[in-house]
Image 1 (cartoon, rainbow, N blue to C red):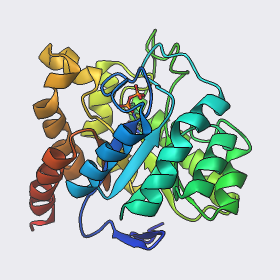
Image 2 (cartoon, rainbow, N blue to C red):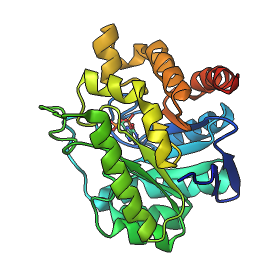
Image 3 (cartoon, rainbow, N blue to C red):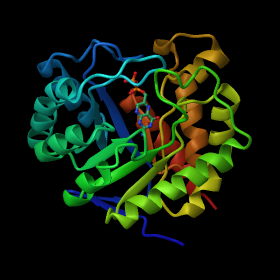
Image 4 (cartoon, protein in one colour):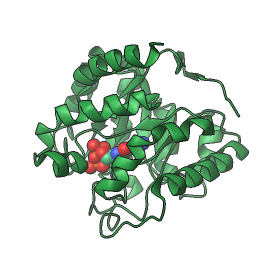
Length: 279
Ligand code: HH2
């Protein structure tokens, strides 16, 4: 079924047929794999948010718990303490759509009250109360695929058919979300979440096979370890690799990219969009 490619996030209209949208990453955490520890202070987090908005971010995704491989979970109270003041200020002072990166219903509820309009759930509704929180707030939902949990997901991820299994999972979870009354759903294959190098590559190479589910596709390859595995470089030197992955994903149907390097990836997306649109 072909669904509308036009989504409304608060006052902002996103036409996913027209271009690829950029989601900037803001981790208000001590331990995220790339920007951990840099934006724990709410003032610095806001400055970084303003900088990304200025660089052309359409959405800012605010997270308060690292989900890098091996990370320990934090309590909802701690996550709320980290992110709610930052979300509140960004939502009131910047002209950007705010997304909250959480899989916990209490955190989502507080973030939505503070001005977030998208819940980015990396567990695609593992918390059974999440769908009702999102539906009640008339918010939008990102459903991401992960095999296992961040603590254990990279130990030995296995698939018989990674593209088919991830697609089937996202289709089922999108149906659950739609049934709960959530009308704006975005799907994400979850690059790096319980996936080996070849799994990540297959998902990006065959991203076009998710298009017929009818939902905008988000991908988050930014600075991830599959790039480190290919290039043998640390996270801060993976920008060119990120650009290559972003381009491939856009040509294969991505509607939104989740990135650290907003200014650079916005430029990459503009060029990739031109090539995608050409006849
Ligand atoms: N990746 C990360 C976190 N959230 N959400 C979606 N929808 N897609 C992703 O690929 C994704 C995500 C991991 O990256 P990051 O936020 O940079 O690091 P950390 O989890 O260490 O905070």
